Amino acid sequence: MADFNYEDLGLKDYKACWDYQEEIHAKIVADKLENKRPSPINRFLLVEHPHVYTLGKSGDEHNMLVNADFLKKIDAVYYKINRGGDITYHGPGQLVGYPILDLEKYKLGVKDFIFNMEQAIIQTIAEFGLEGALKEGATGVWLDPEHPGKARKICAIGVRVSRYVSMHGFALNVNTDMRYFNYINPCGFITYGVTSIEKELGRKVDMQEVKEIVKAKFNAWY
Image (cartoon, rainbow, N blue to C red; front, side):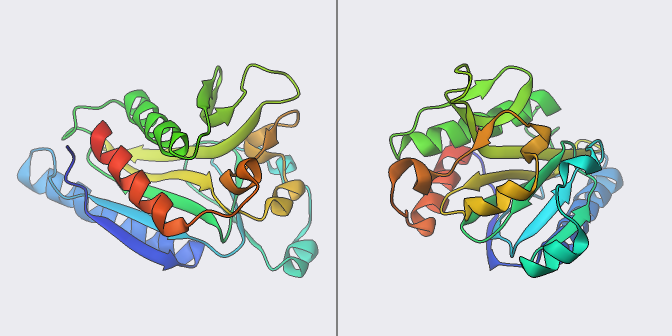
């Protein structure tokens, strides 16, 4: 059972949250270097963001399909950031999780860390009767990943790891306004759709309930 320090930030500006992540990350790295051992400090941020698009360091700018003027019209902003992965959207009704951890403490490589994150999300959505799965050649959690024309992504994952300390994380579509995905090629994919728990169930779900399930599932995987 993990001993994560969860912090629920509610609705928080993306850039302010990114800066906060960097601050925590730097503190963990400094502790690790000073004491020459894996750092016991950790933080697991849970947050929703106002409308924002983020492009990972290896992403293709052409996957943003609208210009700056249109972004203003839809009350959204755009950032190029230092995680892996391509472009994604964050907004109200989407649960974003940022585990800031020293992976050495948990004896995890980056691939295992991402796998554990995917499994925790698969178990989370299973509580709502949804069968999540992995898709070969892609990160994140999908529904019907092996069925052309039906495969759709419900959770995006993108991380940055420096000195084995992680930041960034996952974005689970809960009650997300799915129209905002129309303005990008989500995660660089053109032929696959996106979905949310609300869209699949045909009803909104309680965000606080989802947060509590997420915490329980992540605790079990670390």
